[in-house]
Length: 187
Image 1 (cartoon, rainbow, N blue to C red):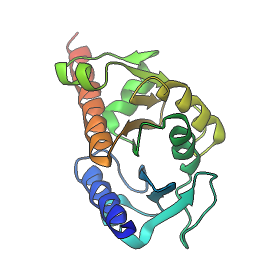
Image 2 (spheres, rainbow, N blue to C red):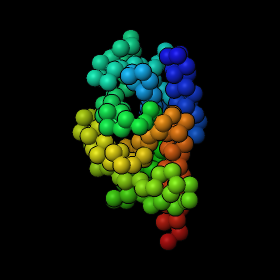
Image 3 (cartoon, rainbow, N blue to C red):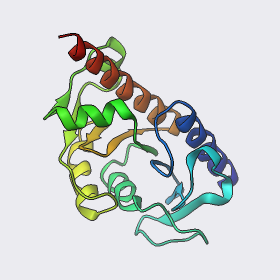
Image 4 (cartoon, one colour):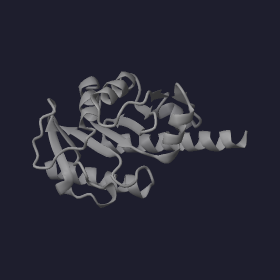
């Protein structure tokens, strides 16, 4: 079963890169399965990621796998501890979302009916250093009541009952940010 989990992570990691939701070393996805968090390994690049580049940690943050987890492992760990209803997290660096997180304060406007149905609200978390416990705590404050959060100057976090769900919510966030940007540019 763990091979299946790893193959799903690889599939959506590559898809995230193909769709322009992250670049270079940025972003990481995770799946919670049987009390273990499967997450991209540190230094792995999403477009060439392999199953051997999936790290595993427990819900105490202890590394189980031979490969070291992404520096954002705390972010994933804190969210899973907070939201027992979710089983997957997408943390990505889509360009329009990052721009919106710098310009806007408070939240990203919801523009499409789909975003309203699936996301309801997209708050913006204050900037905290990448990989830090402060960032994990800041995002978790918002993720308690929302399935998507923009992180100022950093990217997005979306959650779901499956990685497919978290991934498509991430696409909706980026679509919302792009539409907002295109609308604002016309004013």
